[in-house]
Amino acid sequence: MNFPTHGCINSLLATVSELVKRGEEIIYYCTEEFRNKIEQTGVEFRPYKGLINDYKIRKYDDLSEALKLIVEMTVDKLDYNLDTIRKENPDYIIHDSLCTWGKHIASILSIPAINLMHSYPITRSSISLTAYSVPFLIKVGQYKFKSYFNKNSFKKILKRKYDINLSIGDVLINKEGLNIVYTSKQMELSVYQSENTYRFVGPSLFFKNQQNGFPFDKLRDKRVIYISLGTLHSKNPGFYKICLRAFSNTKYYVVISMGFDTNLNEFNHIPDNFLIRQTVPQQKLLEHVDLFITHAGMNSVNEAICRGVPMLLLPHHFEQEMIARRVKEMGIGKKMNIKNITPDKLFKNANQLISNSYFKKQALKFKTVFNQEEKVSHVKAADEILHYIKKRI
Image (tube, rainbow, N blue to C red):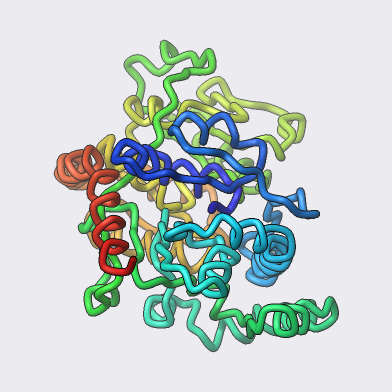
């Protein structure tokens, strides 16, 4: 069962395909838009039943907005899918870390469950490592969340129908007896090492062999900077204008992927050393760039390290903050606060990362390790899942 976003789904497909090859009969629940991609793994696809069709988190850096969507979907998916899954009587349930309804369906039906994570596990200990401490989260997010939650009676509905007491912690910390984390052991934080339930199996990259007519010839013999804030944070015209001012008419050729929510007409003049697209073939492009300016999402960071590319990291929330800090510790990049960024600061930090060979050497060192792990991550994940389930059924 998946939360319906490309990031959540792409990391898991190779593992699902491996389980099918080993003889597991898998029914895969997700939304209709992902049917073709999912069916290629050999599973039996089932579209979610329910009323909620708008799954886009418009303000993911606003904790309350993210929680609202997850809670609404949890109620919706329990109401419309629980009885169907009960009749199917599966041996176990696999869900991703945002799929809270998967966790609760497994709990209600007393079925073993595995959590597949495309980013860092969120625990009370890991949150406390960042500026986003638990008291901060409660102060900023819980007030708005509680007001919304109580106003719409979701808490009472979950309690009355399913005996579920859903809190912020339940939504953020979606832990199971086995939690597969799709990144390298090199990214593991000390707070997870005392936990016996997390398995860092290596990156899982979903490679799309398409170039979308991208003009790679324009990058030849140039120092290239690639800028992307990911899917959920891409609507940020103010930041892109800072990028234009920072790198206009410099020695760098800059590629910006700004998504589909930013209107190109907002920019009066685009310098000749810029290429701006709504979407780019990111993994292929990373083979040609000298620096990646990124929001520090785990998928993007994994892809950059697998290509040996240093990063300038602009985290938007606590999960990305943890990732950015670890990348900085590894010597592969530098971290900046996107809210305080200026053209001068942006250029200075980017120029240092490209000019100082230390960052490139570190990126190449970890590239070897990450690529070795990426080749077998789906095999390791399947091994862990089947070993875990064998002891429980």
